[in-house]
Image (cartoon, rainbow, N blue to C red; front, side, top):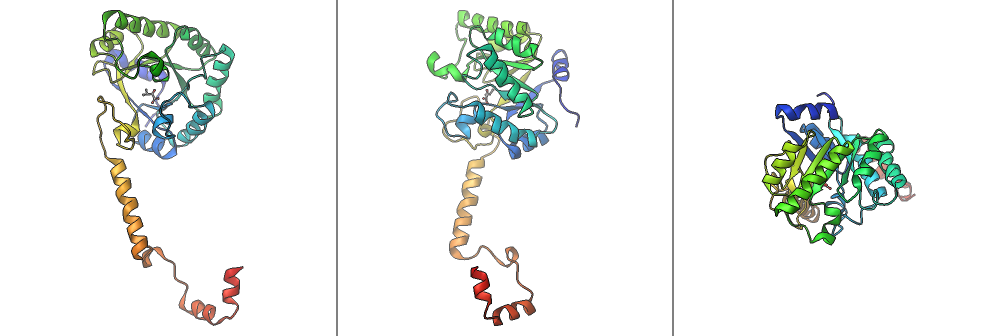
Length: 287
Ligand code: KIV
């Protein structure tokens, strides 16, 4: 399979070819979703909630993101790998934002970064793009600031709020972003953003009209059980599979049925006989 590029993804938009994006935070998941043929693997800061067990994404640090992005990089061969700039990694000085964006590229081997909308972020995005790093924007519900902005509900439900989100998407496109995540807005708003932008939109909880779709993989495979957003389609019940497997293992060990002969290496009989006769054997074992 050829490696996915920003240019190829952008060429799809006029032809109506859909873009697929999923999150991954380590080597096995990165490898599996890449082999499944997704176009973009996002090392999302959803890491904080679904893997690290935080209540929100705001405590996630650059160190945690880089650690996990490096692991995902080892598994992703063809998809575009995007590192999600965590809260506070790009909201202070421009220098700090540039340093952190560079770390995703140089230390973790990502192909680009994603930034959530905040007032003035288009200037930061533009500086990162000027430094040669592809940037994906993120508008609508922006989880890093959701708590201080009235919670995790839909955004852009009235005409004024919807127009502000369209303007934010246009500002990020103007800054040079190569694609735009549009999270939790009514389908009509996502449709309008998709119509107005030249770059591809990637929706989550925003209906079918975007140029692509993204989900948090742990939601899609049923591995994150604390809550499931209404817009998620569950394709597997992985938590139940793991729980069943672990319970069977516990049962087998307690019953003495694991390990069985097929999991055990026996000594050749001649050697075993010598070993048992040797009075030093027990001493050797204990050393
Ligand atoms: O952190 C994340 O996983 C995301 C996606 C939901 C787009 O930002």
